[in-house]
Structures are given as structure tokens and as C-alpha cells.
Amino acid sequence: MKILTQSWRLLLLPDCKQAIFFNSGCVVAPLAEPAIDIRKLKNVNLKGGIVVDGFPSVGLANAIASECLIHSLKTEFVAVIDSSAFPPLSIIKNAMPNFPARVYASEELKLAMFVSELNLDPVMFRPVANMMIDWALDSNCDLLISAAGIPYEEGEDAKESPPVFAVGSTPSALKRAAEAGIPPVLNGSVSGIPAILLNEGAWRNYDVVVLLVKVVRDMPDFRAGAAVAEALAKLAPGASCDVPALLKEAEVMEKTLKRIRSEQQAALPKEPFYG
Image 1: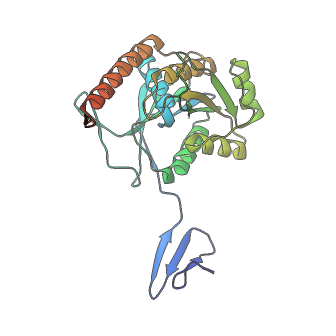
Image 2: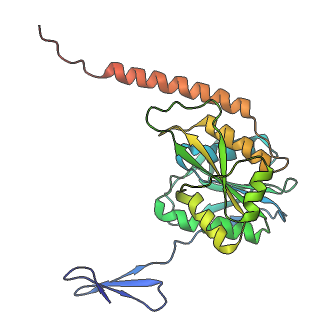
Image 3: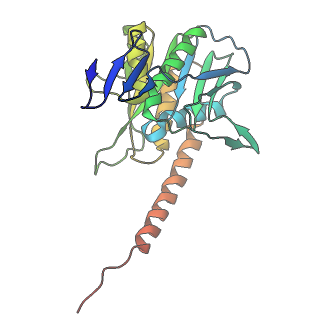
């Protein structure tokens, strides 16, 4: 038993799945991960295939790349993902509601993609990462690919075509990235869902490759998304993305943001002038 304060105490139960906080009464607080439900819409044979993590990360590079692959390839909607811990959200497309986390797949290419519009609470990173690895293993897929954005430093100019590097959970994962011409990161750190995928992949001896790319802070970075999509195409034979369309969207987005920032600056109150 560990004393947290003078009046509150914490008792961990033997199975480590629950904790009891008590004072005059008691409150039971579950420590187990929130349950995530994968509702299958269609059976697909993905044996020996690749799974792509499209849950949003910094700069949204992996989410942008996943969406680009889905729209560029002939994929099928095969599953939805739901949890009581997810925010209540419905994505309306073509006048129809959609779950905010979904799985698309191409049986021909042996390729599956998780996509999501959710802004997840960090407490959900671990269960979501574990869910993806479990699903990849259950589907007999050989590789899971994710991506992480590294924000540009203050004053650093964004590159037209940012370089992409790779981190692997196993020697064989690193070898796959090297054979695709993606250089490794020797030292550094990764955070969020990609970090948990790497750690769990190493623990389970399962191949995970995380692509690292520089991204613009606080906005969707379509150039980084295009760079990740091109790297994904090297790792996943047959996968392709309409990169020119992505870059065109980047130009439109940049012009819009510049206009908005200019309008916001113009709307700021002017400093009083005294003669």
C-alpha cells in the first residue's frame, strides 16, 4: 500500500488490473486499456501483406499519405473501428455518415490502411497501437508502416521535398527500409503511436517501419505527406499515390493560410500614435 496524501491511499489489486483509491469510502478506478471494437465488413486475404497506420500524427503526414493511397488505388472498405473512449463523431461523406476510424484494403496488392479523422487523447495511443499490431498479426501481414513528423525548428525554412528517414523495430525491418533506399536514423527519439508501434514490434519480434519526415508546425503538411507516400510506394510494391495532386493541394492550402494570416494581421488594433 502506498500513501499518496495524508488522507488518500492507493491499493493495487493482485492482478494489477484495478486500483482502489479510498478515504472514508472507496472508489474503484480501472487500469485496463479501453476496449476497441473492430467491426468487420468484409473478409479479405492479406497474407504476407502490409498494413499502413493512418492515425494522425504531427503534421498529418501519415494521414495524408494514407488518404492519397486510398484514393489512388482500388481499395475496399473492410472494417470500422469504434471505442467508448473515442470522441462522439460522425464523418459525413457524399451525404452519408461514416465512422471516424476505418480500414481499407486491396486484396490484390495485399495492402491495408487504417485511416482516421480522430484527434486522439494520448491515453488512447497505446491501445490503438496494440490494436493495429494485433490486427496485422491476425491478418497474417508481414509488415506495419507508420510515419512520424518532426517539426521544423523556429526560423527553419520548409523544404519543397523533405527527405524521409526510417526506424525499424527489428533488423529485418531495417533491411526492408534499406533495400527500398530509405536511410536509417541512428540516434534520436520518436513519440506517440509510432513510438508504441516500434516498441511493441521490437518486443513481439514483428516488423514495423516508422518513416520520419520534417513537417510544418500546427498545420497539415502536404509536401511531407507526399514524401511519405513516395516512401510508402517503395516499401509496398504496387502502391502508388497521385503526388502531383497532393502538391497542388499544398499550394492552395499555403495561399489560403497566407491570406488568412494577412487578414488577421490587418484586423489587429493599430498602436496609438502620439505626436
